[in-house]
Length: 154
Image 1 (cartoon, rainbow, N blue to C red):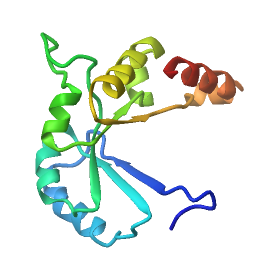
Image 2 (cartoon, rainbow, N blue to C red; image 1 turned 135 degrees about the vertical axis):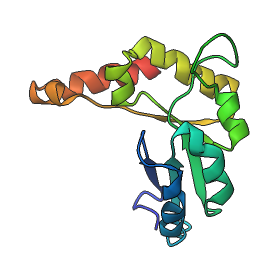
Image 3 (cartoon, rainbow, N blue to C red; image 1 turned 90 degrees about the horizontal axis):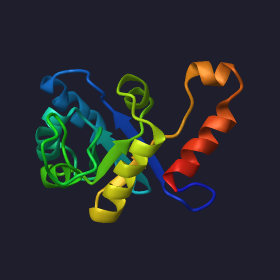
Image 4 (cartoon, rainbow, N blue to C red; image 1 turned 180 degrees about the vertical axis):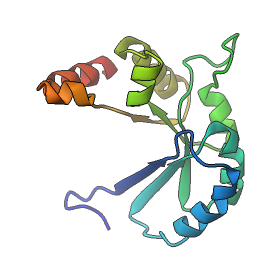
């Protein structure tokens, strides 16, 4: 089901920090019913469940990590590299999510480092999140925020 422009549809699901490993079977059952060849489906389970999901998911479903750091290795406690997520079976990583921006204070400059690293040093694809907070939207700053974020990623 390609769009009018001939582009493939992309559907991504981010589990965030929800559920337990027990949900894998239900998710895989639902995903096994989604075999439209013109839709790319990417799921982002919590990091601890990536390998289990990769081992059990339907073949047409791709896997994303919810975050990564902008270095291959080093003393970065709690972080994972794009190389590590690739080795675990991920072809994608989500970067710039609004929760990472607000809760972990990741700004445009820091996110650009991550995006540049992943795109230039690895063969992992990036889902670059763009968007404003509710407060920014309500104050009429949507275009300003989105423009700033897009420019920062270039």
